[in-house]
Length: 148
Image (cartoon, rainbow, N blue to C red; front, side, top):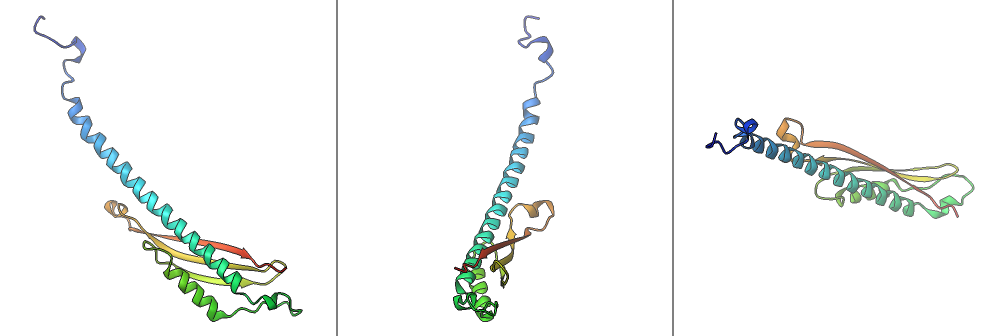
C-alpha cells in the first residue's frame, strides 16, 4: 500500500478527462453555431422591419395631401410612385437579405399606408446539419396618414 499514491476509490478513473474534454469542446462548438445563426436571423429580421417601416413612412409622405381633404373621400396615390419606392427600399435594405416589398394605401376613417416586405435570411451553420441555409422572413409595418 505504500506505493499507491491515489485514494482507494479513484484508482480506475485515470482517463476520464481525456474522454470528457472533446465532448465538451463539441458541445461548445454546437452552441456557438446556434448562437451565430440566431444572431444572423435576428439581424436580418430587424433589417427587414426597418426597411418596411421606412417604406411605410415614405409612402405616407408621398400621398397627395390634397386628396385627404377632398369631399369625395378617395385618396389619390400614384401607383408608379408606390412601386418605385418599394423597389428603392428593397435594394437599399442590406447585404444579407434581398427583400421584395409591396406598399398599399388604405382609405377609411383612419387612412393608413402599409408596407410588407418579404426576404430570406442567409445563415451560416444551418446547412451543416442538412437544413436549407436560407430562412424566409417577413415584416409588415403601418403608418397612419395625418388628416389634419
